[in-house]
Length: 399
Image (cartoon, one colour):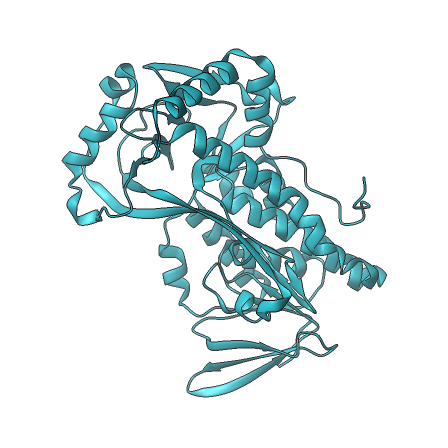
């Protein structure tokens, strides 16, 4: 089998890239180790930046998002038993975010790919890229008890942090940057009415909490927990009680509780690899970078990588602009490091750290007091939260 772009990973980034390439007439094949059902079972983020919303519209998968998604033009910060609203739209010239679950984004992309007739190979085991520095890379994989070969021009590694793509790059050709945080997020999904119309990020002496939602009738809540905590030790009743302690009194009083649909604990880390390309392999999304979820940037950063690679491939195949290929990594990383900074800053400002002393506590309080009482401070949060502009693949790196 032969294709132009081989995409490893059928998560939202791989499927979005495939959909955009297909619409430009660029042939692509997606390989996925798991089943489609398993991919859809992953519970992930649901806050989409303005740029990702626009990209999904360009990909032609916006119909259900626009019907069922929840546009938000604000977000709240809570601390000292009070709430401060950040007017996203007012501070950014009308930009907003969309609350629409990653599972639903993936479902829409799967359906669009099926309708286009493009090839997706699920349950492809032992996927391995070869000859990535040559002009003729290829991928081997196992399916149906046989080994198969997929020849291609380029490889997009959209297979996540633990995938094979990044591991295919020699260790002496890349550099990793990492910060592991000493806590995780315990998340709970429930079929209950959200406690507020907009997300609430809460700082409390007992730890961070987040009130979010997936729809008008389904809520997603998080609380900061230690890395030694286990999900089975957290009953629904214990979770709700702890959440109420960490949010302002008026929020706790309005909280509608109910049985959980799903509970899980996610560790927090910041991670970036440089460069994001090796020969004809391009790393996309979690394969190249991880952010703590505090800034709602994980899926959105993957989308900005997709935007860069999609436009690069369009230039290559439609205009012969192979000179732009070396620009992929530097273009993506300019935006990635800014998003990493925002996510690190939000995490540092809103969480309780085990080594925190009284001075650190006062600094967090002063930071929140300043940022929420200054229009410049609120604007900083707003413009980062709705998403910084996508970088142009043709824009000189010195600009």
